[in-house]
Image: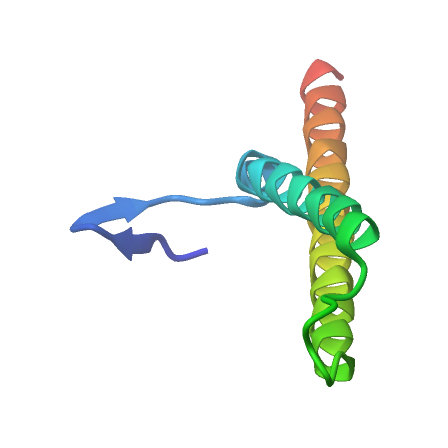
Length: 93
């Protein structure tokens, strides 16, 4: 696999490095999802707006995006950790 060139340096990334990058992203998106759910349930609808359907559509879209991001990043962490165990077992035998 070719190295990633960024900031004037060459970075060697492998599948074992994915959990290191995906775990903080999963935590970030999970926290924002929780904050959005709590905030939306506390506020629900702004009373001064005549048309709240676009507001609700936006919030529901954010719910979906943050939830899917959390699920996919958690899955990446899970699959990346599986790689660690397989490589360790292969090296031991």
